[in-house]
Every structure is written in structure tokens, then in C-alpha cells.
Length: 182
Image (tube, rainbow, N blue to C red; front, side, top):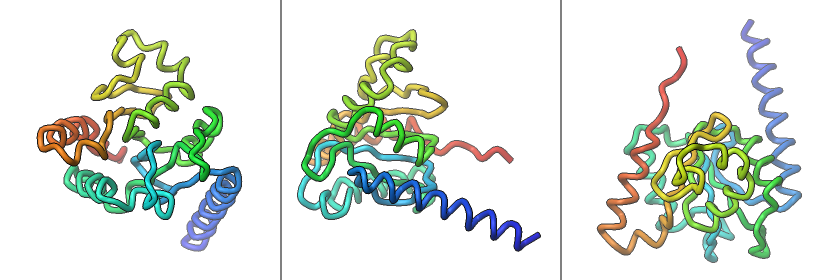
């Protein structure tokens, strides 16, 4: 029984590794846990982010916020919505990558990332009866294909302003961890 479980676990890990290796070969930059609950999307990258995604003050603040909300330290991953040349990913490639991660919560950290989410999930967003949700405006949680999607609306820029930091914290509290289906 334990051997079967370990064999299944090894198969899942191998399958995920192969999928992410293939996505990386196509220009995807990601960090964190492939089996995450929260996928953080970032479109405006600085030099540090090209070396290791969300390694600056914004990444530290996001990880701290997720921990404060009750997420496990390994419950997140980050994905750049641009390639190494700072060109926006194709919407289909974003959808494929999000599907590979299969998060319960997708957070666009900046407007560049939110713009790509709008393109990639245009039909699903347009079906929403609320205009604010259909436009993925900052601060609204939208259900998209079973994922909670939140546009923070400029997290990195908010770190320099105490009032904006409080606004970001209020937005992040909208996506507290989901209960496990036990």
C-alpha cells in the first residue's frame, strides 16, 4: 500500500516536472511550489525579478501577507507574464501554464499581469454579470473556471505608501485560504 502511494507520488512529480520543463523551454519564468494553492502573476519585472521572481520587497511582503492569512509557507508560486525579453506571453500560453499549476487562487500583482489575464480569460470574464468583475477591476474576486481571481492593482508600487499598503492588505484578505474538503 505504501509502495503504491509512493509510486503514484513519484509519477505525479515526474509528470509535473516534465510539464514545467517544457513550459520553461517555451519562455516561462516561474518560482515557488508547482503544487501551489496561490499563483501570483507579475508583469512588471525589475532586475531582481529576472534573477529570481518576486525576490524583492514586494515578494517578501506578499509571502508575509499569505502567511498572515493562514497559507502554508509552500502554498504559493509566482509566474512572470513576460518572457526574458520583457515581451508579454501569449494568452494561450498563460492559460496553459495556469492550468499546469492548477491553483485555487490566482492573483495579478500589477496591471500588466491583469491585462494578460483579461486577454487569456476574456470569454469567462465577459460572462460575469458584474461589470467590475467582467473587467477584472482591482479589488474584486472573480470566479474563473473554478479559480478565485484577484487583481491587486499595483502591489509593488503600494509598498511606498501606508494607505495603499492597507488597501492591498484588505484586498488580500478577500482570498483567505479555502478549507480542505475532508
